[in-house]
Amino acid sequence: MKIAISGAQSTGKSTLLRYLKNDRDLVGFEFIDELTRQLAAKGVSINEEGSNFTQIFTITIHAENILKKHFISDRSILDALVYTRWMYNKGKVEEWIMDYAVGVAKEILPMYDYVFYLPSEIPIEDDGVRSSSKEFRDEIEKLFEYYIEFLNLKVYKLTGSVADRASKFKEVLEPKMVYTADLTEITSLLDMGTTDADTNEYLTEAYHHWVKNGYYDDPNCKIFKTQLNGNKGWAFVREHEDDPKSCHFSRLTVERKGDGLGSRIIKRLQSMYHYMTLWSTPDAMTIHSRHGFVFSGETLEHDGTTYTKGVWDNRNK
Image 1 (cartoon, rainbow, N blue to C red):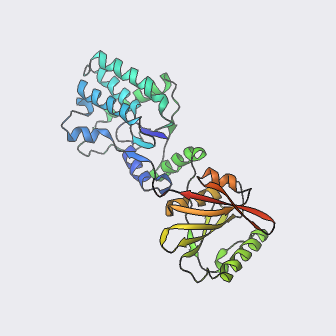
Image 2 (cartoon, rainbow, N blue to C red):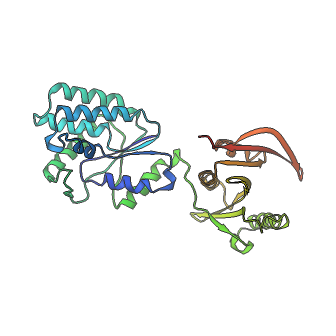
Image 3 (spheres, rainbow, N blue to C red):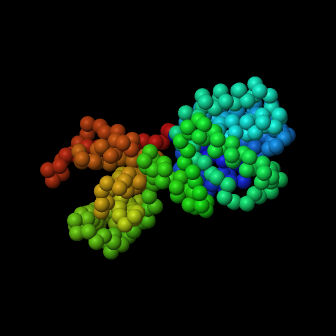
């Protein structure tokens, strides 16, 4: 998934990117920091003092970045186009640079899955790198609004605090992502905490099975619980003694199906372990397959139900 965070200088893009880097749900994305600081460190003119070379370098880097598979980038080719236009209007770059920026932008913009736009809501911070001119930022923001409309771009505007922006960011992505769940290990039946009668019956039976087979006293055997928007879920896993990063995924249940909590639990377990096995009922094979489990022809019968063995192996990836 290719994601960009765009907007004028001093609108909170870098702050948001740093915030998102600490979000476990976004593990696996490459985070691409702002290019301006890298240019300044190399002695390249930036901000109002940009030149032909500045924009050639900037546009080319965005063209290279679009080849990455999964990234969240501070700025995009849209930003390069906007700043090139400002410089062209001021006579700081030549027409062929402007044409180059337009051509590359039209080619690359459709390749982004999402472009998020941050309007100017916060005071300009003079950090010695970015421009501290409000007039410059206002002019850049007007050009962003112009090109968003002119190119008929679908952008998602993020406003509010950094936490508000991050929450909206994840809300937009949610249909195409399976976020993880926070899992808490529990050690007793009382800690299960369900009020649903059917779920309580299932968990009681599962816990009794856990105790009967000696898993309760085995430190490698763990029961995890999570909660999301009033829904609760539980996972039973048995870690391999010789490799605690491998486990057998014994059971999974949620009080309420349909809100993706089961998928979040599986995703979280896959961030904790690099190898998992399980026995799946026919009904559950679909969700497990969707999360990368491969099923063999090995089956077993229990209480009239056929279970098929599945394996998720991420050890060499």
